Image 1 (cartoon, rainbow, N blue to C red):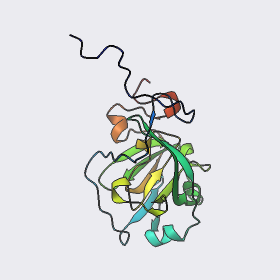
Image 2: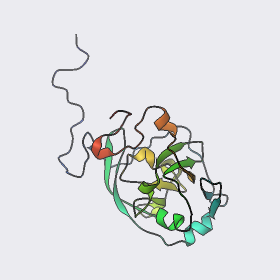
Image 3: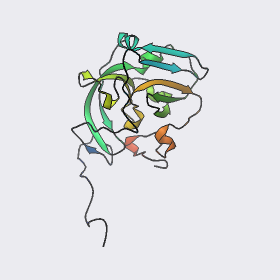
Image 4: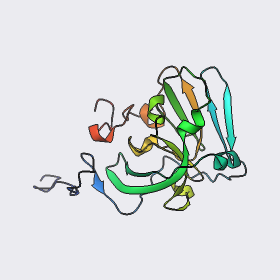
Length: 199
């Protein structure tokens, strides 16, 4: 007896052209985490960019909120195959935060409260592609979705948009983060279905 019913095709995919291959549309916002949810107080929150030479640039919560904000409306795509379209965030562009950072790095290790890490090319954080987001749909970002602040890199699978972000470590060479070391794709382009190494 087969373990899959003949004709089974999984969850039906929407015909919406905004959905990458293999994705399905959700209206809610699924909560997926690699560990327990950290509770980070804005009074003690810090965001630090450390260059490959060890130079540190740091912002407090008040510093972050004083920077020019942007309100991107973007589609997000999870490696577990759900997509949510037209989500609206508020936060600070990485272009603003990295404007005065002198670096020769090509890669970034994103570091989060709770120990989570993810790596990606530095160029994917620049030119209006990424933000430190602290509001979602007009409300403070809740802890379960990465509050008080998370990285938002919507053109890559959502595991690259690290929750509870606390800093960036700039690197000359790529180094795998949490999921990349566990076999996920080093880049994670949803339009190319780069879920796992070798995809």
